[in-house]
Image 1 (cartoon, rainbow, N blue to C red):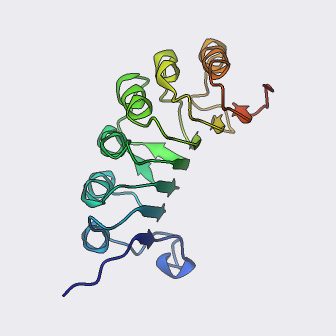
Image 2 (cartoon, rainbow, N blue to C red; image 1 turned 180 degrees about the horizontal axis):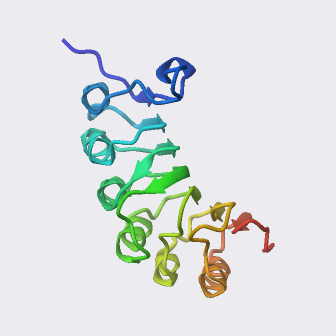
Image 3 (tube, rainbow, N blue to C red; image 1 turned 90 degrees about the vertical axis):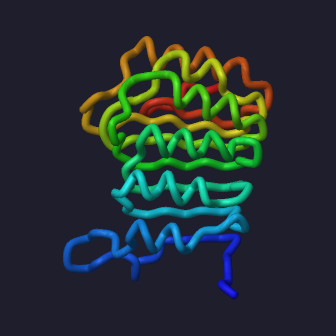
Length: 187
């Protein structure tokens, strides 16, 4: 009988090739590592967005997901939305949008599907794939929200987009901590 894990964690240095900084993890290995019992998923430096979406889909009731320095596609966001009912924490940090434009659809669907989300950090390394409508479906359960933009101005958020997020955040009664862009607008 195959052993399964509630926690799948790829955030270990031994998962990174010292000679080139690339992940040693393959899509096939990631998909074999998860199961319907997986509730916590931690991904580091993973560029195969289709395999990541597949792995998320194979997980059980995901409670916490962190995706760091990886490619994130619409299929990844849709797979997360399918797990939204159980999702409590989400961190997408220093990731590269893989085919994600500034559309609202997938992000709005993810937030709408996640009524119990307590904390969320979104930081893309390139671009700002969030439109104003993305923020209208932020769950009222949120206690901490950080949405930062690229540090080097490539595809940075426009002032109107930042204002739309700040306005939406004011409608979140449980919110205790907020960071938008590279500044803290306060609550």
